[in-house]
Length: 217
Image 1 (cartoon, one colour):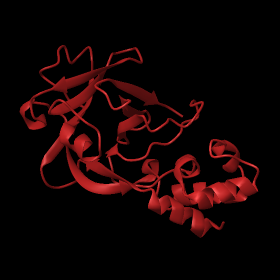
Image 2: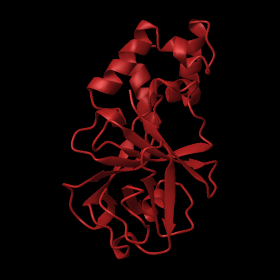
Image 3: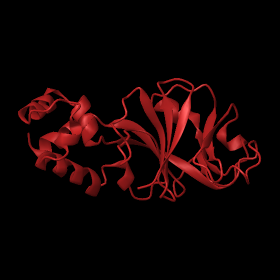
């Protein structure tokens, strides 16, 4: 296995996503910060973002409402997920309008180890490792080289320029995570604007429940 081979495995696993930017063009797909009048009192629960749920549908996440967003509870690391049958542009949100562009998301090494082809299994086997031992694979020269290519070639979502949020796509591990989240959990949104903190909106097992994580390194 060479680095080119491992990157080719990553290319095969690319997943659809949307990048959101305040500098984009086209229809408004969401809003960053500001206030959301249908959710009061905005001064006590600051609005983080709201977006068009159709973006999630197009990345394979079932939705039962037209728009979804989340707000933080001030002075506490808790969040309220805001669902509405109103279209995002009808909610009267203030803040910065976000515009969506269809894109793809490149997987981190953990995803390649877990979901790559038999070539990946053979490479891991040559190291005495199984698919779930991606943390040890990351410590090998080839694993480190993949991570460098993931970061410095702007393949990874956290390293994109001129992007304010990403809808769908692959998720990455964070320092506080004990393991790479399984695919039953879907990262719906990752925010990049104003980081740190980053915010992640997760759909739980394809159902109606969502969680929000605040990430600080």
